[in-house]
Structure formats: structure tokens, C-alpha cells
Length: 274
Image 1: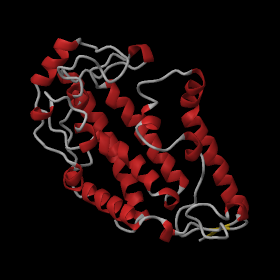
Image 2 (image 1 turned 90 degrees about the vertical axis):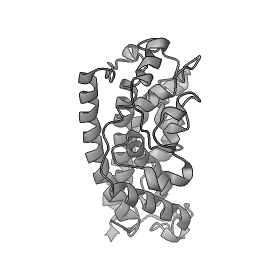
Image 3 (image 1 turned 180 degrees about the vertical axis):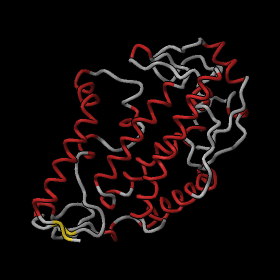
């Protein structure tokens, strides 16, 4: 497909404006040395920085008219007119394809209630974020002890405290990631942004930002349902220790799973498998 110069430049401008709106708070805090326990996660845990996020790519199979300034860009053809898929590591593409396809093939499990965040502070002397625990240390530990924890996501489970890890019904490892990930998991849904970033210019800019927007929304629920008191940041808790809180969490989790399924399908189109 050929995009004429006015069309693709308009898309690139719209992309940059949307990215700037997403990153405005983080960039402002960076100038003052402040931090935000929810919003900054997308820039500290994930590798893509604001400057890179605002650069629009057309994705594979698209030729840009009048794009001489992109000559010499990484992962582009020498004349800058198109993305060259052959320059993306095939191992990366294969892993992302296998993981996303395996995740998409499974039903969404909605009964975890975000307990992974609670397990990260179970019987700990401190917290992972500079905000207080909503229930205090003892009551937080009691919530963990009164629930069955079933976390399937390796990068969440690896932050469990030593005392919490044996309470998990699964034993996630990096080697079992393709085997275990499922579409109801908040972290697997947030990671759609990570995989879109890993695929680089293969992913159209609009899809990358759609994945970022979903990750931002999921992260907000993740922390609202955590043991932390974030009311000072304008975030009321989802009280997963109560029946009403569990129901609220599951409803939101289902909505994110639905949104994630659509983005996962679009990413699978990028890597050539549905």
C-alpha cells in the first residue's frame, strides 16, 4: 500500500500529539524530580521513553511517498520509504507470535482479584512504592492469608516476597511463559504494550498508542485494587477484600480482557498469524 505524503504526514502529526498528551504528566514530573506511583510505571518498567513513543511508523507493507528524511533510519529500507521486516530479529517476532497466539487460545480467568500486588508486600518490612498501606501491615497480611492466590504471570510472581511465593498455586517461570499466560491477567494485558514496542516499526503507530492507552488504564485498576492507599493521588480503592470490591474488580477485568483481545488480534496480524 502506498501512502501519499500529505496523508502520512498528517497521521504522523496526529500520532505525535496523542503521544505528547499521554506523556505530559511524566515529562513534567521529570523536570521537577517528582514521581507518581501509578503513571510512571509505564516509563520505568517498560523500556519505551516518551521521545520514542511519539515517533510514528506506518507498519510493515506500507510505502511512504516523499520520506527521504527517513533514509538511514533503523529498520527502514535504505531510501526510507518503508519498514524492512527482515531487519527485525526473527527470534523476537517468533516469540511474540507464539506468546500472543497461545494467550488468545485460552479462556480468561477473572478470579485473581489483583492479589499479586498484595503478595509483593506480604510480611515485608517495607513497601515497593512510597505510599502507605491502606489497611496496615497486619491486616494486609491477613488478606493474603485468607485468599487463594493463582498468579500465572512470571514478571508479577517474581516480585512476590519469599513468604508469599509458596502460597501461589502456580510456579511461573520465564520458560513457562507461553504455557501459562492467559487473557484475563492484568499484567498480560498491560504487556501488549511491551510486545508492540518490541516489534518496533513493524507495528503501526496508532496500534502502539492503543496498546499504551490500554496499559495505562489497566495499571490504574491494578493499583486501585492493590493494598496501597492512593487517595492522595485521586484514586479511590477497589476494596478486593470485600464481596463488592471483588465484583467491581471482575467487571473491570472482563472489560480489559475484551479490549486486550482486540489489540492482541491486531498484533497477531502484524506478525502474520491470527
